[in-house]
Length: 385
Ligand code: NIG
Ligand code: FE
Image (tube, rainbow, N blue to C red; front, side):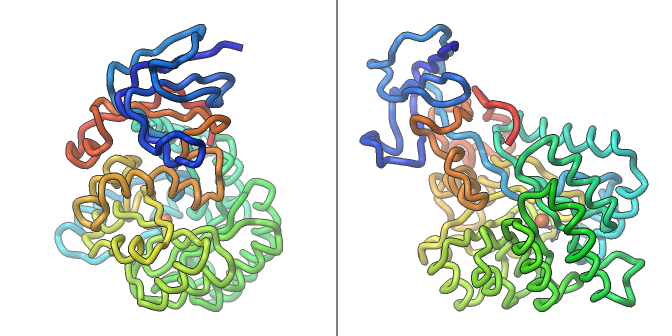
């Protein structure tokens, strides 16, 4: 087994301090063996290793955990974006454009596109990624999307309830029967999670609850798109059902914050969606001050947020959402890990996965201070999610 020493780290950010070492360790080193952290501590005390990388005083962080993406799709919606920038509002209905293109695409084309987006994310420091289905909306097309996604990451999510497809326009409850019955059965072998878009133009609270309960009964973990387009009791429903994460949380009522703060449900904020739909950003400060665990994710999808860049989301969170650079970094790493109920990623401690990302700067503040600049690169990320 080869040991790799990452030496002369100017600042090591760990997201943990219960092992006798500080959360942020200056002048640090890390030893990696077999994809795991075997040792970390002051560089002056670093043991010998077979190979050595010199970080030359730069900052090392846990790789980003992007806990919310929709990467299995075909087609292009740049014209919709352009129209939106000229004043047209975002609606859930645009999803159907991508559904038509995705159904018409070959397996090879879908996988190549998704793999290219995963590679694009990885180049920007993402080392764990969740991928949802949701642009097939038939039993076969949703199962296909999840089968393809599961070759790229273990964090796969059935989002058969993204919108009601056109062929069920007159019978939305019939579509919910399909999702909770044959679709769930065909997709469960490839899915770890189930999700529902519960919002205006998508699924009602009652429909969303039926789908989540069916998913839970089939052994899947729960996630939810809620309160993106307007306030909704869906956030509280997600908490009550024990969802790992409620995502978007753009329009929160005080009762939603209370429910989240007393729970282990993570509030996942997706500022790329507010950026690309020109909407007001969620108030992260209110959530953090109430003690809610917050995650940041890209929501990468062709309609509302076509970015794979976690550093871009961090910059938005700091500039627009009241988060400090440290809070935003934590949300993009440990927060995402909590949203996926993972304790082996998003933190740097002995035994954790050695998913290190290198910032070409002395501190993580530069992630927001130098927006749009490709400062981050994966250092020792093992493949997969
Ligand atoms: O998370 N909100 C629902 N789904 C996506 C948008 C998908 C689309 O417009 O294609 C989202 O923003
Ligand atoms: Fe989404």
